[in-house]
Length: 237
Image (cartoon, rainbow, N blue to C red; front, side, top):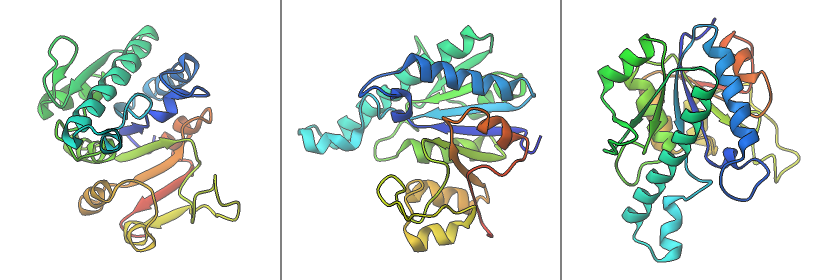
């Protein structure tokens, strides 16, 4: 295996599948199977999941809701997704722990770094919900920060596209995919990979990011085994 401990970042929108809202059971099942396959290799897995299929805090201003209030609503949406993911993973026989950025003691443990690392060492899948517990930070930033805190080898950003492109491939048919790119090039070219806070955290801590298509069966397994999948973002190209 190329990576022993990974931080998998999943978007909430990906959970919608073909639906317009909510959680698609088939997509949830697919993700569980993908995670189980790498877990059986002995990989230590941490997961951060977004909440965009339910609510995005950035929508708050358009609806007249205070931005801070909206961000907390978005954090709660991530907890709903995390609970759904936890349930399906445990249905497939995996041991999990759900840790929250703020206290929801009935369903989540509070995030404590040493405890999170210990869970990973014991072979449990750790799911981080509620972001970092503060407004104005995205789940991308959460993924980068938690990956650094638990000393993950890589951030794997699972999306519905197969990497980072020169432009949006869903809008521009001439867009081409990068195989490797540096953090500095991401900044200079203004590429929409993750928010700048997340990218900066990874750059400063020399933590690589791989952007890949999570919806293609076997991609996560192939990545862990060292195959070239998606786009690798590192300090030096």
